[in-house]
Image (tube, rainbow, N blue to C red; front, side):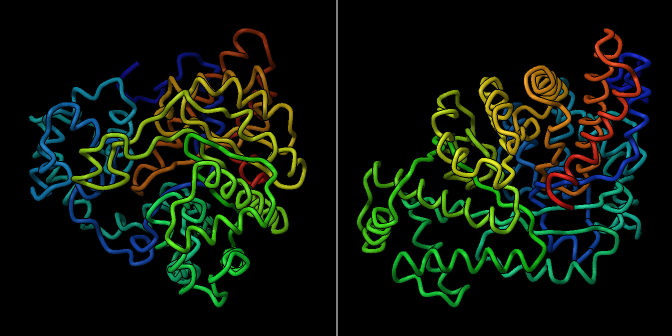
Length: 455
């Protein structure tokens, strides 16, 4: 088997046959962090660093690990200097999925099979620069060439979705939808919460002077997103998913306290978050949206990176310290059968709890291996557990979770190859017949996400 050849990740003929049945299916991506302005404006990229490194904190984190200075990652160095710095350490990324993704990007999008290194940096820089000047390498064409059918972006409730409106007329062949992400509405213990409330006030006609107005403004943005084709809400619960019955009066008192500039206690914060989560669940159930819960991220853990670069810069970690079962029981019971729920867990030690919870509720599905787990190893581990404990046929499917356009194809290819390898092994071991396996991988790769999200 050669590097990234046609048998990449497919160690049996059965796995290869299964992969060939799903390799060319359209990409349905219900969760990503796309810069929609980049797609709509459709301007050409300038260089390979802009394409592969400028927005990718996976790349940044590994460069730091190999001793590259911040100036050559997110700092003032020029893009060619940053690319050369990346190329010089790239051979050391071997074994990490980033090594495979970026090489897949070069192979699939540029036809470049040369491994990245200090010796090949200039050659790759010049060849990619030549190709990036061609019309076929503009963002919209790249999305079509990767056979991307649906993209669901992540958007703050205060967003006016102007680029989504433009995308309807200006982005051909790709169904672009917003996703309502009200994380900031729940972070009443953070400084950013007051800023969010002010922005919410500006973005809606509902005054936020009292709690009723605040809830009304959230509902107004929810309706606005629904009018723009939204099919899902996404909530990052952090390490403390809180669901329990809380009286509206109690949540309102906490709201008023925070609006007066007084810090709520930890108990008050938990009560406020629990009430707002229930309120959001009600809105989603009425609209027929999917509720996506991202659980277990410890944000800005590395203080120096946060202080120098800011959030979403590669300083986040995961933790085992999450009470997933106790934290979700009220919410899942309250909305049992009323709204589809997708669970994304960041620490793999939570897969056992997540899969048994999903098995207990027909409206709950397991989301794909997320962030630190989206490697062939992590995805295979998760898929095998879902198949053994829950139902692989009800798995939510793949998402790119990506900030860079060219990686969508690579991430979905890695997932589909891993899916084919996992299911192919079941066929080889006599657990399921081939035709059933073929239908199963086709469902997980394409039909299931379309069904789940109503696309």
